[in-house]
Image 1 (cartoon, rainbow, N blue to C red):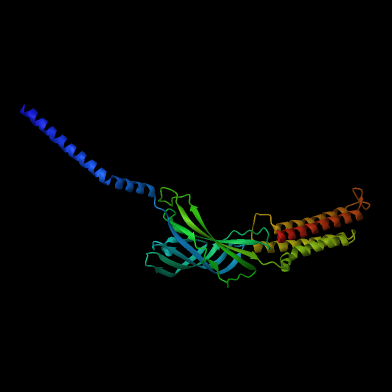
Image 2: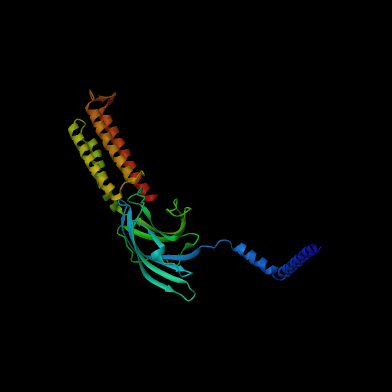
Length: 340
């Protein structure tokens, strides 16, 4: 009986403690429940932290060595970064995507609110994919890319379009510098760089500079070899058909002029898989030369002044018409490149 009483006493004591705890829980819930609920909702609504936006701008002070054959250009520019947290260091956290580049700190200021301003001088040789389809009447958009080394979830570049500009004294011989535009991009990589579990994404700033090649009648100088070769080829039809050696000799000379001009232009524009103006002029010129030589050989080998029942004199006039068509095609190609 004594043991039973003792057990019953302990049970009663436990029930009393449990009731006391429940009572206090209701009191706390009644007083602080709304506050705890508000805190929970605020934490849930906040979600993951947003990327720190850094305003980035550029002032281009030099452009040079625009080389389609080498696929590059040189640029010098001042870049600045405004960081609201004041921790961004361009020397350590900025990558210039270029063939070669140097980054020199020019200024760094920290303000009372904790934000900072950093300015650097960037000098770079940048790889550039030139579009030479309409050379020498081409327009280009030079592209310089800068990238932060922090993930895009942490840092994001925002273009400072208000103060970004190109210096008035920037001049590129043979080119007209037209406009500067900034564009914010995301760069996703398909590698973890040897230590990341997931492929990272970084923030980029694209600096676009629009330039146009100067246009004048001097463009004919670039095609002198082709034009001379075509003129010599056309003169063949003014030579009597019996002068076979003279006609072939002139046509052979025009081939050398055209080949020389072709190699000269390739040195200027480099290799391009696009069928552009240079390729069109090359094709038309060599087509005229080959046609003229083939017709001269056919006329020379004809018998009794007839070829397939057609007189050689008429064939010679037909050849002159074909050459005229080639001349019109050349004019159309130049007009297309100039006007479109």
